Image (cartoon, rainbow, N blue to C red):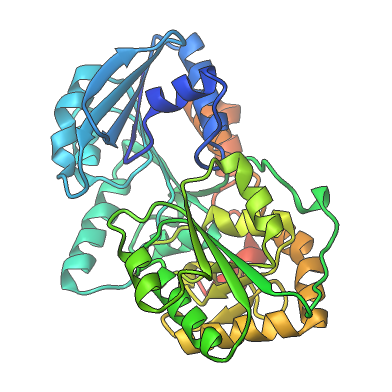
Length: 402
């Protein structure tokens, strides 16, 4: 069997060489996914991983037998530019980690069985976006696409809304690397300055600008705060905004931090802020899992993908996205209310447990690669509309019957 995995970002060779040199993971489950693909390469005729984004093009077979291909593209490339690389690997099985219609069309025309393991949400948009989503749903519904996985229940429900067949959709998750049971619930001393952490892409649509403007409001009220921002600020726009708002002493831009160190960052903070705007295509951010595991209270926007995962005043304080005044109020309230703080931290374990799913990324691929009836039955029994997820679906939205 010749398996090709296509992803948007995350160079396999770079990660493998970093781990071989004793380095750390840059995002959750990176070590797990790199190791899983290496295990497949020991058993299959060929395993190739194609990454679209990168500083330079490369194509190398690593000592673990994985063929790592980096296209060397920049953001804004057209997916059809990946087709020559896909042709080169000549797969008879294809895993798409990113929703690229030209690659789905290539797989259909070449009769290559395909599995999608997405981590994307699909929000309502204008006519162009509706047409794009309709084309994607049509391509995913074609017979050669066996299953359409997506990361979390809410992201799977968004697939339903754009027209993907309910009987194809499989919710999946990464195996947990940290658990709330690893830590005791936390308490808050209101006499001490309040510290915040943000982890993720550093941009306006992720709500970082809204967070900085909320801090500016609180500074004007003489509220003592400190914010650590973990992530890459690609054009320095958020650092410039922090300077403009006079927040240089309150905000530290930490840059990229190894994923294994994120729990320490979150435990050191009094709260984790997840301020994503609705237009950002969240799946279910791993930051939610990590903050709940750290038992550090969360202040989050009302992004549609967070619905059901976070409940206002039970597992988080939820504010209207883009509303920096409401965000400032939520931070102020959490910092001044020890009882609320303790309740959110104590509830983090139950909230984390409610997010757990019975299908991991690797298990979905393993069962799909096998043509044995029991493996097909295993996947069918874990479909979105199997009944397993009824409570989680009810917490998120009303969906059509299968």
